[in-house]
Length: 217
Image (cartoon, rainbow, N blue to C red; front, side, top):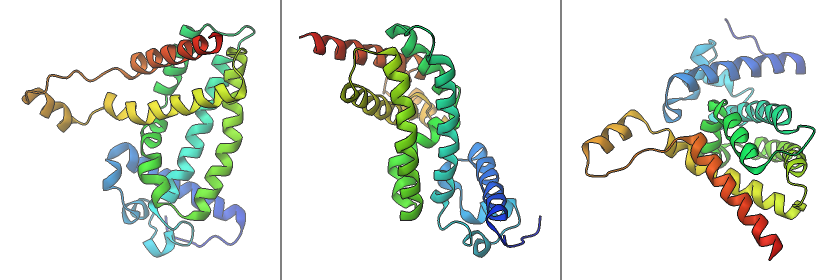
């Protein structure tokens, strides 16, 4: 496609969607650090100068993309985790883990969120993202409150903070690169990479049960 500058908000939205689709294609094909604005632009015949009319950094694009991915995850959480009766801790943990595992793009981007994406995006984009998080965190809070009615908002906020910190740290460990796998095999480092669903659900069970014990002390 040839570049035609957007003349109104609707056309700008179309251009941003084209940019996001190109960035997603590259994200599925190569490591994040190898993706550049030039490569994104090449996918849709945009020069870097044309891209700068809509975004300022590569991270701006992926912040917009992760907002879409987060929304899909929470839609699935609301469909699966909000039943007539609260789920028991084991079922809640395993269903949550499986939902996350069904969204690998979300997990990959979320593991980059604080070390790469937020640190290199523009202030304007980051403010938009933080305002978005304020809304979606409220949706997650409702899901957890339904299943853990004995927890107050402070308990649930702590649970969310710890759970998301675990996702950020654990997902990369559970999904090593080929060179990491090969180096582990060929070295004296005797390590078996964990399974994300098993690892995350087990951690959630320990965390929730531990918090419940603390509340009755």
